Length: 410
Image (cartoon, rainbow, N blue to C red; front, top):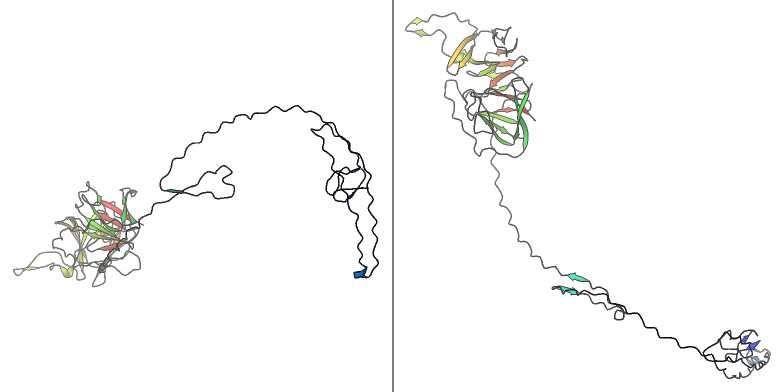
């Protein structure tokens, strides 16, 4: 074993350096590794004092152990390597490196920069700076004044409307609105004109072949029909007034109002309807007017004490049905002396054999002693009653104005 002269560590004989401190061991075989620039001089031999055994008998009561003295290593002559002259190395100049062009960043007004204060930032290239835009203050919006409350309109009484649903209470005309023989009121256009809010219904024009024609959307509000200057115009229909009728459209239905037209506004009935004195109905191409016996002059008046000549009048007569040829010209008059009275083209008490638009059994009249009623018998073209008052209509109802036939769709 070889003991290190520096730290006293025992090493194997073939070790050249101390395993503990790395100092060269004296007495180890030195092997030349090739030429070196200069020979390293051998370090002087350091003497290690012998260790003195320490006795612990006084403290532990045991005999002291004898430590053998260290054996001094034999002196070994180190092998000296001859110096070898080395050629000097030529200096190597570094290749020039072109610096990349750096574009100058223009200064931005109204911005701030965050300085980098991290460790080592001054020894390394500075990173790209972060630009933080400072937004301009937004002015607060001006307060919007609250709208003034709008007073609610006073509720208006709804006009009496006819019902066109089977099983509903029987509708009745209002004779006080217009009495036969009195002039018709002047047509008055609705104030405010047309009001368009929301489409509720559709007004469909029905052609002569009963096919659907032009369609008009009925919005909430007032919708007018006439020959000119109205919502729906038919300038070629000479039987229409310029402002013939108006339609008041609501979410519940359509109310038709005649505007005092010459030829009237008619609606198709689907249930018995009460007829008062002077009221008119249309069957096919026939315009008929009902007159009650209690409302007309006596059929056999006296003149200077002389009774006018005429046919006898049955005691059961309660009225007469007159064919209207023109507004001021009447045609045939049919006595109504029983109930019911059937009307048709071929069968019935009153017939119109040359009118192809009248069904074989078209309609009938009834009398209960105080009121007369007209009822359609399922005819092809229907029975139409004249609207003397505002009349409420539902989906599927039909209107007859002049020569124009309409249907209301939902």
